[in-house]
Length: 120
Image (cartoon, rainbow, N blue to C red):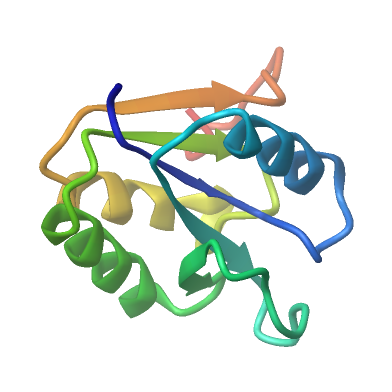
């Protein structure tokens, strides 16, 4: 069974994507959780959250990617929704992906019919 890292908002954050990721990750055996949160985000996370990314701190994206590269995960599952990733239109997610050395699967929770240039 491949070891999966889930990167998303996560409980105790109250949003549909956090709930989706919690349920998805709970159904999988070996996993890592990387929680995205705003600077004033939720307090303590459950013990399965080993890494955190502060949404608006670009360096956190690279640090988390490097940690995942070194912890033995086989694939990354990114949950994407506009507003949960930092940077203009969530551009910091690209820094994160570029720093990874394993395959990435992305679930797009919103697909815009007319995205701007930077959203593309």
